[in-house]
Image (cartoon, rainbow, N blue to C red; front, side, top):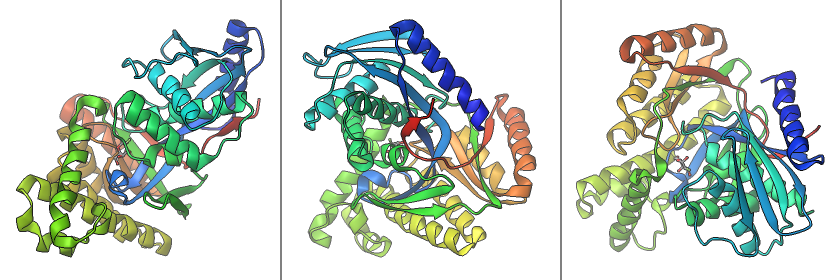
Length: 391
Ligand code: GAF
């Protein structure tokens, strides 16, 4: 997205705020993400390598004298209210849960918030595995902290937003999406160690592109499958402990150790664990090969990641398998895989810059031919993490 395109929503949201609330806001921005590799490894204390998207959520905000939060979503065309002094214990399965849950958890962390008026706008595709939820949480946190005169500490805030989603919304997600939305770096993917919560930038070569194809099959995270995968991983750790000693998470298990303990696990739990331990190794291999400019090897790791998600973790779907496998066969595409939590959503492909247009056309035409559906295809130019938008 160019600066001129970005200035349109920025002006629109400020105008909407002024006409609703009669004063000028400050505007916070937090991006969605595409995950290059490392799926479901985050809640296993493992490694992930996402990049922040240009698609983002904006939250315009100004403080109030009382402790009320008034939120209007331009995307939903709906308004919600909330009293910081008598917050409901849990979310009510509504988009506003992400805003109010973050407010509740910020206060629980000891940060005293002012009441605020807020207007929300987003261009992150909803329910497509591109982290629209995290973008809303992190931009709301940034806006609420800014309106309260408190500092935005990126990693600490990402953890609070994750808690909001775990405890208030009821989705047991890991830290990846909130972390990269808060800490993303323009032009880079982030290698995040989800145990130490340290990260390092991994530059995306200027002659290579991350091509994202949205199958437009909506995923349903809270639908139980995600939490079921997490439980299988926890079950694996519980059953492996007597064999392997004091392991805390699948992060502590190598593929060879898992194989040697195969008989300790039910077949399904074994396959779930195999995805995680091999995926952790693939993330580190992808980082190494991206830095070395060995894009063919990086692509192989991406392809293997897709196969592992399809066969062992069983989180893909036919439409997404089709898009990944079609991309894998296109000249100039190094590798392709589903990205995000699964059960629909998007693929990400690492593509030679000169092959992007042809690859995009092939995906759109192929998908229409096979499924009669539209695939939205775009190039990700990794953006910066959360911050104030200059007005
Ligand atoms: C979702 C979750 F929110 C993340 O924490 C992560 O587990 C991802 O699915 C799968 O890698 O986006």
